[in-house]
Length: 418
Image 1 (cartoon, rainbow, N blue to C red):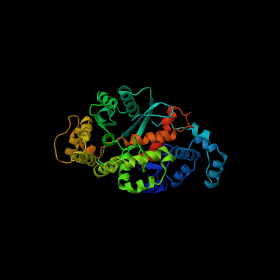
Image 2 (tube, one colour):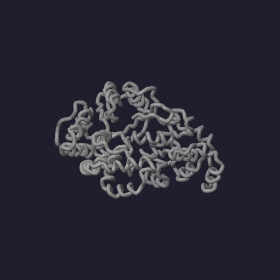
Image 3 (cartoon, one colour):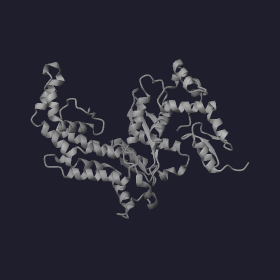
Image 4 (cartoon, rainbow, N blue to C red):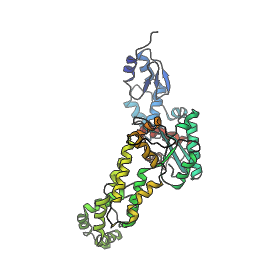
């Protein structure tokens, strides 16, 4: 049989975006993870209509949407699918479970009290590249040894190529002391590794220093400040600064005897220095939430990431004397503790043509791949949110293996594939 033209195959599979891929000779179904005959168009259409493909597609949709498979057993849900998905076989829950995806290969505490570590990998490239979750494991305890073992075991299990150790270049984590020790331990296995602590975490810790020094009142603020959520309390302080008199007028309309929070709020608004302190924060630190947001963006150039930190260093050094030296030097001290900051700065200067010097472990060919090098652990933070969404109070019967598989699929469909 004569070969089918590549353009014709592409036309056939383009009718089903996200379903098929081809190298020009072979068509591969990404849903079923199998090759599909492609000498005639009807073979593609026929595969789409098979019960196996429909079941796999439905399973993928349910997991990506965080809908438990048991919902297919609900009579009303099945009747709805049969009514509006005509000419389609609706598989039952047991069919999906028998065909469970088993080949899918920072740390938080889940609702069961387990210590959960998630590992993402990505490709350093001249073009933007997404990160992919490859492992989510429960650790018996959290220290540098268990973290290093988890990362090394996960990478070894995922990659068949034994030369991968030479190509692992960046390890991004938060700045916890045990993470720093884990980075040192991992360099034994990965000689070219540069450990970078998350830039967004550093800015958040800088903001914490401001909060600790200024001692803002603890009354409820709109927008609601979440101490553990990066930059939100500064947004709240800026909101109060801009609308101080209006909010004070509203608070004064309430009776102090109605609630303790009203009494505390009135006392806070009567504090002579509070408006002045809020204005100082608004004047000098209102850009911090935007800086954090800019670092959270995907596909950010390394040059732009470092530019954010350099701008923050300049801002901190130019603060007026009313702020303590502790605040002024906080960001400098944080970056000095970041083990990979100087190395990334050297690489950035090299690829931008302002220097010819590179870290000892990085070659000129490797340096160009750092163009879009990430500097934050935001993908891991997003995966923890997804983990807690999947593991709700009604789904504690999940085994850790099945939970990991669900999480990998969910993160791929909702984060990595976009």
